[in-house]
Image 1 (cartoon, chains in turn orange, blue):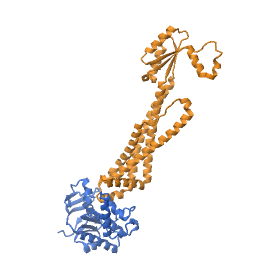
Image 2 (tube, rainbow over the protein chains, first blue to last red):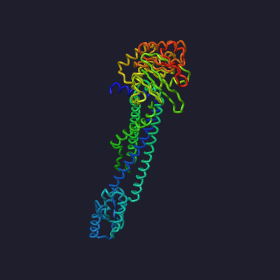
Image 3 (cartoon, one colour):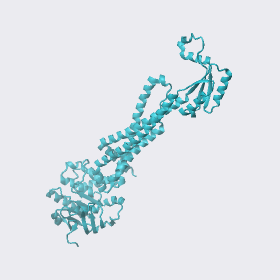
Image 4 (cartoon, rainbow over the protein chains, first blue to last red):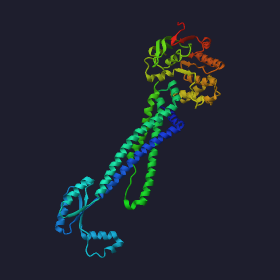
Length: 299
Length: 220
């Protein structure tokens, strides 16, 4: 294809956009909206998963030992738990150690503990699980197993919370997928209609092109380019909006809630997904165009 | 140049537009197709440049059998046929010059050639001073001249015109007819469909008369 033809195609495409600004804006807006919804969903799920994983890694089970457990028994229990397949690590925390930790965490308020006659804290075993078992179901099984040990008085972990969070992620995923699917279809329909409008408004041009012997290829290329440009603009706009919102949100969260969330690391879309999203936008634009092109080119 | 053998055209609503039409138009002919409205003049013109396909019969244009032509080849056939309409079919958003250039651009003509050809043809139709006017700023006669310029800019061997003077007054009609005549004198076969019999008797070297889709002139 000669350079001159390429210039012609691009010029026609941009003129088409210029002449039908409103239709094109609506189409670009639709693509942006659809992709933005989709991207927000992906970012949300990615981050929730990330948070879940992060917290999962930090899950400690604390198994409290009966008051009268002697050193021999403690050693036994510890070994028994260590041999369970789920266990990654078991640390013994003595009564004294527990008190020291408490005192440290209270720091300036340790006066509160001065009048204690006796250390009220139980000795405990801190257990971390292998990552593969960091889900509510395995956790439950594991806890049940540990509880069966005689010298264990109680096991503490964020059970309910974990279950709720995990259920919440599942719901988000489900809602996201269904909304995403709907939007995808709706977008293609809207785009194909918008391009139909563009084609309709340029039917005289197309008629004349056909009259003077332009090939279908020559007639179609500028329209496909328009679809391509729309898709590209739509996806870049969506990514831009998402990125700015993400930055604002991040700075807000970090300044306001860092105390509670700790070293929480929110991530933007992975690079691969950014490329996929742009690609997706272009597909939307071009496919929407193809859908409405055919019938206008019949002789 | 154009041959039809027992051509029938029936539209989807079962309305027969043409019935058993045979004709032979030779290179360099100046042909008029006349008849009352609804006689099938427009359909006949459309069949020649493949805007409609015949229901039955054979049509041969420049050695190509239109009954067998592939959809993708139609574009190339049309580059050898110029067409002019009663309503001009100009793009009102483009200037006179751009309207002519458009016809060259969309078939991939080289830029340098485009300038030369467009200028030549606009000079031929006498509009070299109105290049920058848009169709709405031009008279009907001038608009038709642009349409004719556009139709012949690619040097077609056949020029078809469907009621080209239907929207023009008689004086302008004569001017436009003279233009067709001069194009014909340069060797282009010209086929004009019109309800105006007087024009036919004035200019035609071949006169085809249609009525109710049938040919009623004395065939050779």
